[in-house]
Amino acid sequence: AQTVTQSQPEMSVQEAETVTLSCTYDTSESDYYLFWYKQPPSRQMILVIRQEAYKQQNATENRFSVNFQKAAKSFSLKISDSQLGDAAMYFCAIAPRTYKYIFGTGTRLKVLA
Amino acid sequence: GAVVSQHPSWVICKSGTSVKIECRSLDFQATTMFWYRQFPKQSLMLMATSNEGSKATYEQGVEKDKFLINHASLTLSTLTVTSAHPEDSSFYICSARPLIAYEQYFGPGTRLTVT
Image 1: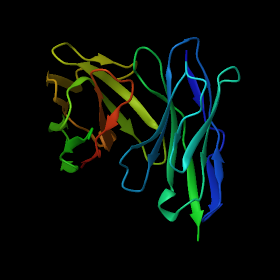
Image 2: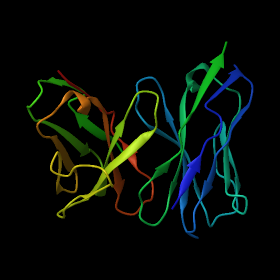
Image 3: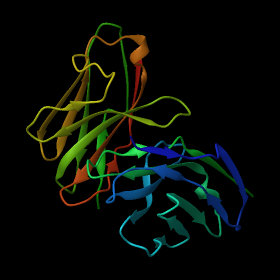
């Protein structure tokens, strides 16, 4: 069985500062992908960043980057220069070869002006 | 690119009636489409996986006779909630996976209210 754990139900960050959202997972697969999705109040799921498990280099997308520790099964998301528009629910997900996502429970991010 | 539409965005129906939700990938072909249900302040719960031209695979605990899924083409999947009851009221989200990709692209969701 595969599991994804997001231990922070809610986080707050001051505008322009940096915040890190944690995610740990468990899988017996050797080949899989990891994702972070953002769900704003509109409830549209938006892909933030993806990481291929066989790649050691951490993925980055503009202000978003991940710290992928495969041995520790950890996949945290760092948001730099936080903006008000970053406020949302953030879901971590793993996709093994079946392509079915296993989602974490989500972290609500509040951005303080 | 990679846009998924969902229609309707919200629907109200009476108990005992059926309602159909459409999910379309607008600018890519989707080998696989997924249907999720999301309760307020909770994560997404996978209901079923559908591949074009074959029967959907339902997750444990999901009634396949109640939630009928049809994946008629590489760009269209439909979810029909049959004989809807108030407990079926929820937010339903579809997603589509392109042919050579691991990531899923999500539709904007459909809010179903059964009265």
